[in-house]
Length: 220
Image (tube, rainbow, N blue to C red; front, side, top):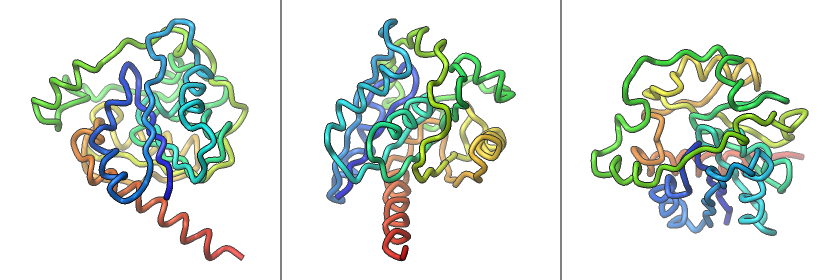
């Protein structure tokens, strides 16, 4: 049994994963999807990681998943807990010393020009519920430099969605190549894949763990 640690994006909450969690739990795994202190102006990058580390406790066999701005938090968690795998889903990939507010210009981000970049492939009913769970995002968490000197020594998979209007696929491919030296995996769906295609996302996360387990078993 693995523990999937699911980290939400900016101005959001652990609720984002409420459809993915039962898909993983039905396969016998544990899920942790904590709320980050997104609205707390005293909370910076390490405080965001603290919330996750505290929720993890002494659990092992960890798959840490970061969505969107959660890409800034997930590696910090992996630097502090014995994670087996890190998965970035439509995520911002930080560089050492880079603040969240600097990421946009540093990566050469250009908006897709679409009006609805979050929920375009989510049902209207689910979109309305998602908006009720939206929260603010503190300035400190975006202004403080990302504190790691290098990417944590944890196997990392990057997963992009081909219909993402927030972070278009070509942009994600380039950033993953430039910052991690890797080519992302791809699937259909938009930015909020955890809401629009939760079962498919869960299946992909399960596949990643199975592939890692198989690779580890074959290692001398």
